[in-house]
Length: 392
Image 1 (cartoon, one colour):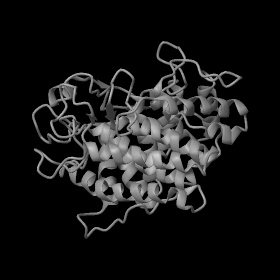
Image 2: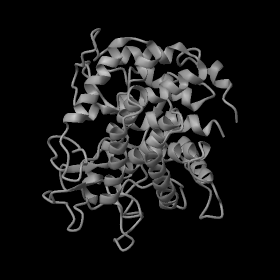
Image 3: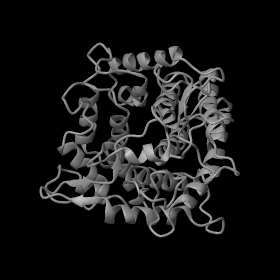
C-alpha cells in the first residue's frame, strides 16, 4: 500500500482519527507533550527515547512535508541545546542517541557545536580491556545491548556527516557491534537457547549475574534485543547515504552478516500462536511471563525495514517469511495494544517501564518491573513499525 494518504492525514494534530497509524501515534504523543526535550517534571532532558521518537518524526516530516514534525524536533532539542551549542539538561552517556541531523537540516552551527560535545564524550568514555564502551560509569566493564543503540547510531551519523574518511572511527564502530555480539551470543548448548543475545555482559566478571565463560547475563530480555536489532538496521541506513568506499566495507559486511544470523532467529522466537514476543525470550510460556509491546514493535520495524532495504532476503523456504512474521505481529499489536481514547488520541499499552542489570538480571527481576501506559520507548517504535507496515 502506498503512503500518499499520509500527506493528507497529517495536516493537523488529532481531531479525527487519521488513516495512518504512524501519523495517529505521532500526533497523539505530540498532543500529550511527549518526547519534547523535557522530563515529566518539566526539566530539560537528553533522552535516548526522545531521540527514538524524533527519528520517527523526522521520517514523517520527510514523507509528508508536515512542518509540525520538524518544528517539534527543533523545539525539543532546543530545550537542552542553547544558542551557543552548549548542552544542558541531564546530559550523560545515555544521551548519545542525539544525532547531528538537526545541523544538516537547519544549517545552524549550534547543532554542530553540540554534536562535537557528544563526540568528544566518546573519546573520553571508559572502555573494557577489549575496547567496548562501558554502558555507564556506574557499571564498570559492563556492555549492554541497549548501549549500542544509544551510542553507535550517533557515532555513525557523526562520522558520516563530519568525518567520512576517519577509518579509525569506522573500525571502532565495527568493533563495538562485534564485541557486543561475541560476548553475549547464546551458545547452541545454552539452556533455553534462542541463538540471540543476552542483555549484557561484565568483562570483569564481578557482577553477581556474570556467567563463568564470558560474563554474560542470564536471560535474553526482549527490549535489549530490540535495541540491538534496530541499531543494525539504522547504521546500515546511515552507510547507504555515503558514496561506495572501502572505508566502510568491513562495517557494512559485519552488520549484514549479523542481520542474516539474528533476524531469522528473532522470527523463530515469536510465539507461534500470537506471533509476538515474550518479555523474557529465554523463558517462553513460563508462568508470569507475558507478551511485551515495545520489543514487538521494534522487531516488526527491524524485520520489515531490513527486507525493504535489501539487507536480508525474505525467503519463505528458509524457515518462513520475515515479512509475513512481522505482519502477523503488527496485526496483534493493533488489536491488543493500540486503544482509542475519548479525545481521539491513540493510547499505547503493554510496554515494560525498564530493564536493567543493576540487580540480579534474572527472570524474577524482569517480571518485577511494571508495565506503563503510553511509554514512549514502545510508542516511538510503533511509529517506526507503522511507517514500514504502511509501505507494504
